Image 1 (cartoon, rainbow, N blue to C red):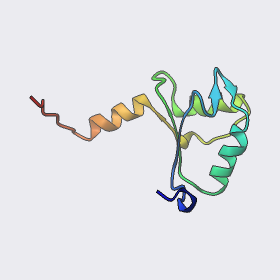
Image 2 (image 1 turned 90 degrees about the vertical axis):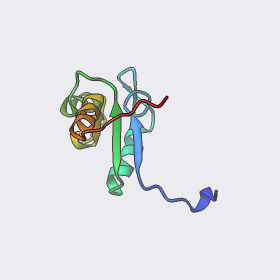
Image 3 (image 1 turned 30 degrees about the vertical axis):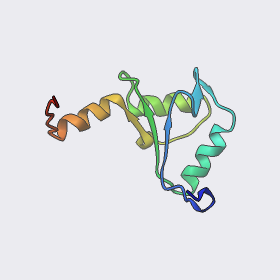
Length: 94
């Protein structure tokens, strides 16, 4: 694989570890994320916090000095809702 010629099409981060760790911003996270957002690259910040909405997460990360719109956050509750809306069917493989 030629890594020098690869282009980044999407950026996916887990909220705990990047851009924050224990509610403290990771060094360089603000600059990295602003570059992603500034270049209109698709960004998703994932979390498994079921009790916080995307707005809650946007406010939480803003209190640490990192500004991101709530539209970039995708929570475990959102994933569950999307899964249930999709009408997925499972077959047990034996």
